[in-house]
Each structure stands twice: as C-alpha cells, then as structure tokens.
Image (cartoon, helix red, strand yellow):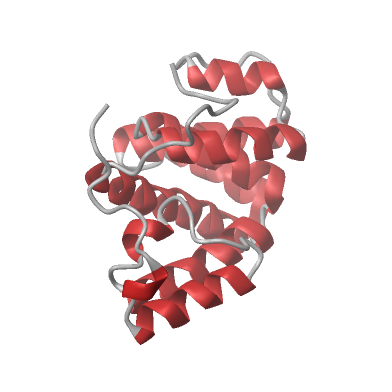
Length: 184
C-alpha cells in the first residue's frame, strides 16, 4: 500500500482560509472533510468551489440521485478509484441501483439488467469515459430521456467525478480501512 501524499491536516495547522473551507464543508450535507476534500483542502478556494459544484451535482442534478450515482460508479471504475467506489456503491444501492448492476460495473461487465434510463446513463458515461466523446445515437437517447439540462448535468457529473478521481489518484488518498464495497 502506498502512503497518502496529502493526508488530513491537523486543524491547529490550518490557515484561516483552510479552516473556513473545512467548516463550510462540515456545515453542508457532507458533514465532514473526507475523500477528495482532504487533498483539496491545500487549495481552500478551489475546494470551496469544487464542493459547491459537487453538492449540486450529487444532491440536485436534473437526472436525480439514482442516475447520478450510476454515472459516478462508471467513472470510479474507469479511474480505478477505490475511495469514490467505497463511498458511492452503497449510496447507489440505497438509491435503487440493483446490486447485480453494481457488481457488473465493478467487474467491468456490461450490466445485464438496466432500466431504460439507467441504460442511457450507463452508455453515455461509458462512451464519454472510454472514447472521450459520445456517439450521436447515445446522445440522442439521453437527450430524449433527460432534455438538454439533464444531458449537461450528466456530462458535468462525469467530468466532476473524473476531476476528483484524478486528485485522489495523484494524492494517493486512502480508501476506508475496510470498505464494504471495493473494486476488484
């Protein structure tokens, strides 16, 4: 196991800006500084902007929590991001994504049992991550189901969680000690 490059900062050693950014995160729906926000705290203004974008995408996106969590799992698998996976696999399950779908994504298999809206999100996210673009038929399907706002939010969810995965992969952010959900 490699050591966390940018682990937690002792609150006594935080700058005033870091303390304010940490407090804003703690006061919001997340309730704590964890995961990607630990390394991002080194740039408190960036962390503040990032966490507000993430708060919208995670809690209020046009496609809803269930589909947002599905997209996050596709990104987490693509980036082999254990922290994102450990956090979001249980949330996806609770939001209504079937355990078999989560297991299929974890093992890199196309999910066998997806609802139509889930298939659209999965296909869109998979193409965007693998090919760095989305084909016309996949885009049209998502547009028909979610509208322009939903498609833009879906793009942003993929981009935002890619950003977080990159931060945590570079910082070697440690996954929870014994996560219930882990990528193989």
